[in-house]
Length: 116
Length: 116
Image (cartoon, rainbow over all chains, first blue to last red; front, side, top):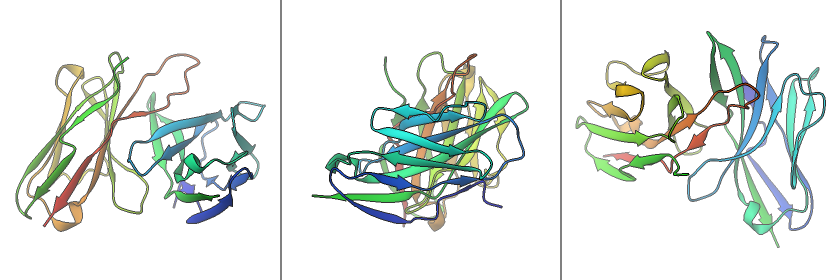
């Protein structure tokens, strides 16, 4: 079974508008972490935001916020005021703990295109 | 602080040949990961090291892929013999685990392999 599901292969948004990228996850662990990474066309993966399973507040980092709904097992990324430079692939990832180590798993990604 | 270094950036080989990729993680990062990213897909974990011990190599095709991390620092990923389906970007990442640390991954620029 997929541990991370990103159902939107591609999204389009107008510059300066907000966009939500969906992510659902599957785990039986009580302690886990959720991440979003950005991968521009240059190829390097860039960490954006993190949400711990025990964090009560939704994480925010500048224009990025994470809409964490634990009961639904979803961790959607919200980008406010989109910029042309936000055009990239976005990956949701989950960190589970196994044998004292973190094991990170990635989704298939969502391609975001921001147009003027 | 220097980032994760990988080499070579690009490699083209014929099927059945061998290839090796090198990774130098961020200083002090005990955990090192090798991911395979096929075009249009999310990164797939091949192997994870904690210092110089293997944490997870369940998705490493051990009949042709091997990896080592000597002295708990640099790592080498080898493919021998290569197949057409090995064409991908090989991403190296490192992380540090401390109390109250999220455990996010820091990625290198990747090594793009084309097998003809």
